[in-house]
Image (cartoon, rainbow, N blue to C red; front, side, top):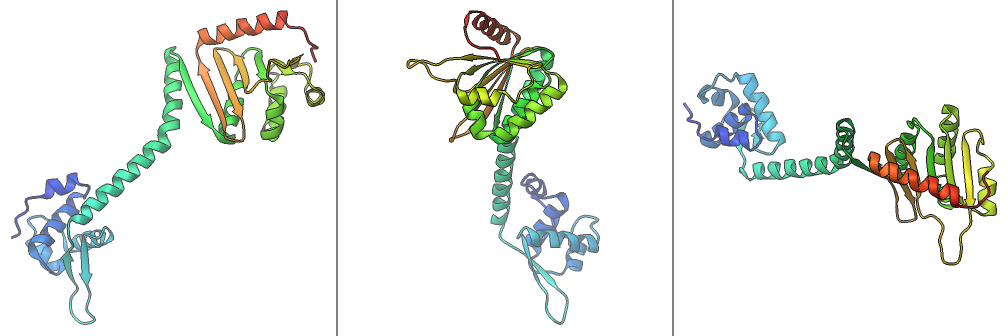
Length: 262
């Protein structure tokens, strides 16, 4: 009867209990048949199960099969360094999963913070991320206040913006926005429904620059969308105090800033 000593260590390294038993048995027994191994293992593993486990060990490069044209197939354990490789592969897989889950973890944390009444920040990348930020604003229970980078919208996301504007108008979500005045902007804004959208056109000067991001304020949130050749990113900050501050600044600017309202 084969005496086993390292089953627990092998299971900790990532093998199943059956794989650990069969592998250590192979190491101690040397080249053997499946039926002989099943007889000598101090367990109740059946011969069919031992065959199955031996095939599993072949798949992870822990044993090899000698299958002659005549006679019974035999199996031999391979060097245990293969277990280290398996651990390294599992570690790499975990790191990849961790990286992929990072953005989701941030959103879940934000969701938790919202339900707990705590501030939260969500970060998004790419067109899909920008779309998520835009769609979140359609949940607004009040008028959206915004600063719009029309040039960037026309250049980078005209399709997304058109679909977003249609959905917002269909849902009756009202919006007031500051827009840098230009002939192109005036032409662009004619497509909006004035019943749900108002824009105040403001001029730039030699010492000031146009908006470099689109900002929307609604409910207890402030969102930013930055569009450039380098990246497309979106951020949603959920905090009633930050939102209240930006609402005050927006309304103050709306009252004291001259410019056509279209």
